[in-house]
Image (tube, rainbow over all chains, first blue to last red; front, side, top):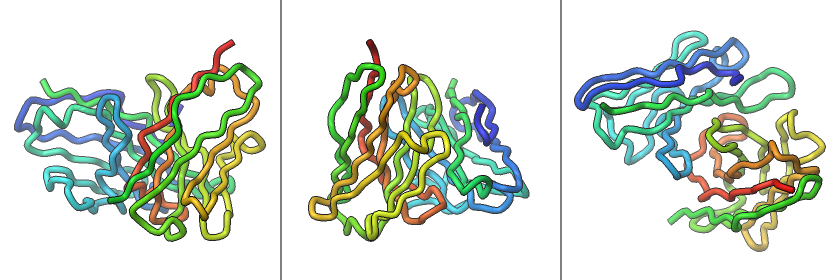
Amino acid sequence: QSVLTQPPSTSGTPGQRVTISCSGSSSNIGSNYVYWYQQLPGAAPKLLIYTNNERPSGVPDRFSGSKSGTSASLAISGLRSEDEAIYYCAAWDDSLSGHVVFGGGTKLTVL
Amino acid sequence: EVQLTQSGAEVKKPGASVKISCKVSGYSFSDYYMYWVRQAPGRGLEWMGLLDPKDGETTYAEKFQGRVTITADTSTDTTYMELSSLRSEDTAIYYCARNHDYQNPHLDYWGQGTLVTVSS
């Protein structure tokens, strides 16, 4: 059971907009930045969004992040077949002596 | 070009230890923290710990306290992760990743992963 809660799966058709939610608590999302990673099959995760809503160089502006309270969302607009992947949210958690927590991952299928 | 190159796959028996290396290039090793993250087959990502290469200070996930040791060799720009008392549940791909920050998981470059299989 992951500390951050994500839906196991979602889907969309090309061109559509989809959102992936990530629910946490006051000790993680509520008090720290949220990060999003994209993992393509057989590959290492790739940083998609940092500090809630910033995109690294090279990440298309079709990807956007937001945070409100103890929840965060990743939105993907103009869905493309190459977006089919597993998406993870992550944050620092201030409980215990501090640690990183990940969501369980959301498998995005492009129909 | 920033690269993190990990050592090859390992097969270990239960109770044994494994030590994985992660050699970095393309940036100043001491300027970034190093995280270790693992992923069991078909499962999600799990944080194991972090290292500050400047002084060797480490922070470990509570789950792995006492079993994991993360070290750095600044002469070769290499970080190591050793996991002891292996059990079948430790079968996973282990990743090193560069972090801009001590505690926020801003992991912008990752190693290719090292598969560790624990089997009798």
